[in-house]
Image 1 (tube, rainbow, N blue to C red):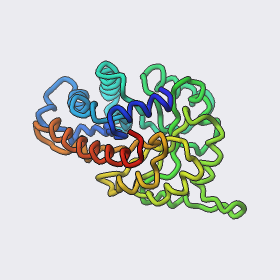
Image 2 (cartoon, one colour):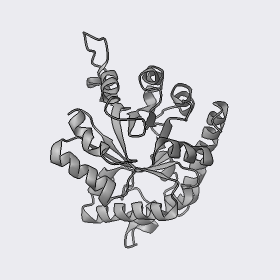
Image 3 (tube, helix red, strand yellow):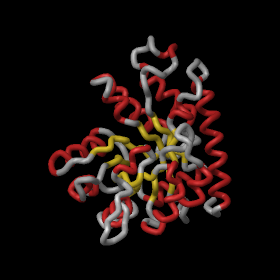
Length: 277
């Protein structure tokens, strides 16, 4: 999927919502636990309830890997189910890989061949060697960690280069944007750092940004849109806990849909205000 195709999905659904499938076996509704694959059944319910309101899904691999082989099977079934449900979804593997050489190449094969993901999150600490194997795949995306929303992000991401005056996350953006095109590279920018988006947009005006932290982490969708929207939207805003755990009961699907609709409706007004639909 290229950038124009992703934008077309956003325009059609009037939504730049990404639903995070951070599926914790300890948090899903109890009535699902007696089934053969509770994680998949939960994901299936969330997808059924939200796929018309969402532009993207983002399974967080830690929640699947922690379950061993059964978790990988649940992930595989989830990806296959999403693909069978609709071809109007951008699918992100939230894996945060960051290695080089043959290891990086095998990670790329895992997410782009073994699993049919459109994109994968990557930590760029080891430089271009980390990302280059992923860039060899046509219509696939590398989502590079730039400025994250966690409290200790300041430990490294705001360190300043005394020669250029750039903070480390700004150096990441300036250097990595030369590695590929706007159809290949996307950046993670936390919603709790919304005010930083104005400067980030000066560095990467045309790239898509994946923005976690709206909802449960306290980020403001309106602020993110104010600083982050560009002329092809350029945003995927992720919400995980606020949607998928809206209810712990048998009405979890219905309540997830309510929360997703609330975000979609706000997003529709924001992109209408920008003249994008």
